[in-house]
Image: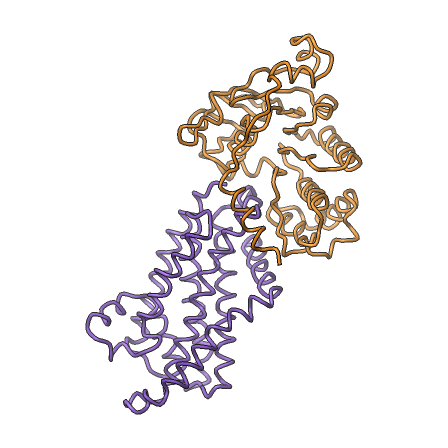
Length: 248
Length: 268
């Protein structure tokens, strides 16, 4: 337990100490909120979609979570590169504990980043449908964060440099984000796109967060939770296997 | 191969990277409580061997027993038996020196009461106590090395590995380090296994020496045995007569290359 705690703490310390990273990571979601939120808002409303900001904010929170969480994988590559990984791998603690510390730390950081976007959006005309559900929204954000932190760690366990990681971001994370219900409703998608969205875990993560924040879910909480939770467990198994095989 | 008086037993150990054989069928034993030096030119296979002994790398074939345990199947028990100071950096730059020490003592389960006292003792030993609250990224290369050594001595394992520990250390720190290590060795019977390029260092402290070259152990014995065997009067001459005087090339691994790249674009 103390191993998990100290490694979790380490991630948080590193996060709060790099202000440039926090601010840099807010640039993209802010731009999306302004460009899409204000730019598309009137069209969305005219098409009968209602308040676009209320629809969009959970999507942008998820985006922020997605990118922050996956970058935990990049942290792992840094650790490998700067040698710190050896320090943990040679220690008399199980690799599972190390991976859990790393994963929970990365997930907490991603959740905080998502929460910051939520706070920012309050100044841009967003307000939660029910304030009492906000804690549940945070929990949903944490679950999505954990899932993608694990994805990042699993991938990074097999990688030695950053070049490959850029590939993952462009060919995995970007499509997962754009082809989810983050920016537009799944119900309004053409059939082919809707099918893709329905096998995309981000769709369910966004849907769950949107349910708690804006009061509407497309699939219902049970489906959302089953999908995201089930995948998280699967990734936990895959991630710990790959992590246990790391050689330095 | 079960012998309770042996800290390390290695039988027919082989490690291949593709076509390249880094370690080729080596055999050796280190009795408990010994200070054992592992010498060899660059690229001879020293670090690869240490990595296999310490569960960092899986051997291609062969058998290892560390404190009686097998590093392939009994990883956790093996990891509980040793401590290690790595050849290349393994500190967290974004944490302070004290935090690095603290993290290490949690990972190695050093008792809370001993922890604070020992961190202070060791940071004072390497003269970093006054800078304990500074981020490691602000440290010079020598200071990082000293911190690394101090951290390696934080917990007292059965077997302590030091992979070229004194590389880049000033003579003062080197002496202090060996004083401390010898004390640990005598008072607690800790086995010390180290590799080095400094022959006089090995000559001074090692009970026994093995010389490895091109992945093979070419000779083993005490300092006087090696001198006798080669009819030389210093370990350095013995070493040169055994390994030749050609300079070895060591190809930069992936990780080294990456480290260079990252240094380039990280320098802000």
